[in-house]
Image (cartoon, rainbow, N blue to C red):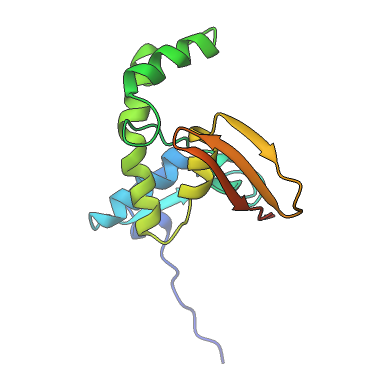
Amino acid sequence: MFSRVKVPTAAEVVANLVIGGGLGGCLAAIKARDQGVNVILMEKAALRRSGNAATGLQRIPLIHPDYNMSWEDFAVRNAQWGEIVDEDLSYFFPRDSLGIVNDLEEWGIKVRLWIWLKCICRQLYLEKKPGFFQFLSTTGLITRKLTMKTG
């Protein structure tokens, strides 16, 4: 009555395995797939509750001279903010962050407002009008409607 169907194993389907579904793993898998490579992405955690990628992608700071500061300024500030700093990473990260943000937006993931808010703003003010906030950026005082999102 029932016929047996052979289900291919992962080894028969793909030759590339990316372990870890964080931002690095996700981007590696996506970039490999863009090149026509079959990939399996394995993640141990619940995707809605773990890692930076799973919490909304708003934690990718956009560091770029056209937006807020030079890569060199970021590297110096990074050293001031933390005790243990990989100096090379302090340069690589800001150099590549705009490209990553552009990729995410090309895939339909809207991240720039949150990145812009977190990185460019120098001070955050709650305005008296409910549902709005103001922040002081390098270009002046900006007012935005407050939107809450939950995962």
